Amino acid sequence: AFGAVQQAPEDPLFGLMAAYRKDEDSKKVDLGIGAYRDNNAKPWVLPVVKKADDRLRDDPNLNHEYLPIAGLANFTTASQKLVLGDDSPAISEKRVVSLQTVSGTGAVHLGGLFLSKFYTPSNSESKAIHVSSPTWANHNQIFSNVNLPIKTYPYFSKETKGLDFDGMVSSLKSATEGSIILLHACAHNPTGVDPTQDQWKQISTIMKEKSLFPFFDCAYQGFASGSLSTDAWAIRYFVEQGFELVICQSYAKNFGLYGERAGAFHFVTSPGSHAQETTSRVGSQLAILQRSEISNPPAYGARIASLILNDKELFAQWEEDLRTMSGRIKEMRKALRTKLEEKKTPGTWNHITDQIGMFSFTGLNEAQVQRLREKYHVYMTKNGRISMAGLNTNNVDYFADSVDAVVRE
Ligand code: LMR
View 1 (cartoon, rainbow, N blue to C red):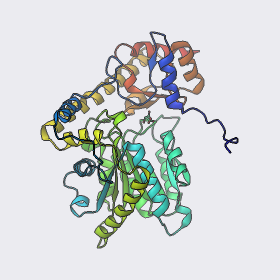
View 2: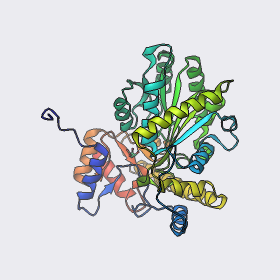
View 3: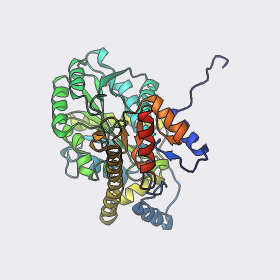
View 4: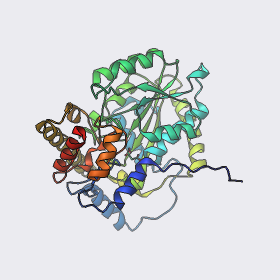
């Protein structure tokens, strides 16, 4: 009965990680998966997470019962405040419904599934989600799993290695009214290129005019700039503009809780007389979807995050830890650019420091990426993306030398 099942390709990112692990060369450099590494190329348990973890383990009342379907209430409430701001009217007016999810991936899936089933724009053609070109590879797989047609809008300019703002804007202007638009809240994956605040305002105006539906993916709050509010600026601005929208929130990167799968999905209703009622009806349907898919979310990571988010002292320490991570990444951006410019490596390298967050889209082509891997044991995705966190003071020179060599070949 399964004779026709074809062999699927290996996941490119996890395949890359496996290949890196197998490589026995001592000079090998891992710039593949987006996971923070310290200056010794080791995973980093945030000191604040260690503290919260110790406290949890010492708690004699800790048990392993099921969480409610929507997850840990202290966690989802704190998550709303984190992303929307403590004094957000959307929260006080009860226009937000939130569910704890299996990290950002689970949130994107829940959002996609919900929109696929319940979003009814007046024009059925608009029942498509427009994603940036390029976007996080998993977006495409997730939305196709829930039968949400996918379209793309231009995003990255190969010439400037920055934002193709004109291309993006004209694509949004020509999208069918009511279409869903996926936006990366900050630290765009894979390019590291974000709109400026002024550009976000223009995007919002166009989206308002065309009744486009914002679908925010927020995986790097606090990790990108080091400031939680700066990184949530675009989302908060859109909410202020009165949009109805959804937000997918991941705590993998900003808490370093990758494997614990802590995240949240938020649905925000626009202000209006039926807002509370709509929010509550949407919440009831989301709960049914959640129950049928995962029953209830995993507890441990959310407990850690919740402890930190709800405790002033721990929260302040977390902000310190965020600055440690974002600061080290910025240092590495500077070091890499300086080194390449000193070597007069052909091309321009300002984009390395202009881009933000976990990734940089280097502009290296597939053949160069292949060469870096085969000859220099440097692992990065085929599209030329590097995870900046894989660089450190011990390997940045080696990486720059290797890039210089392959660019000149
Ligand atoms: C990445 O893009 O490397 C990360 O977001 C990890 C993932 O799940 O793809």
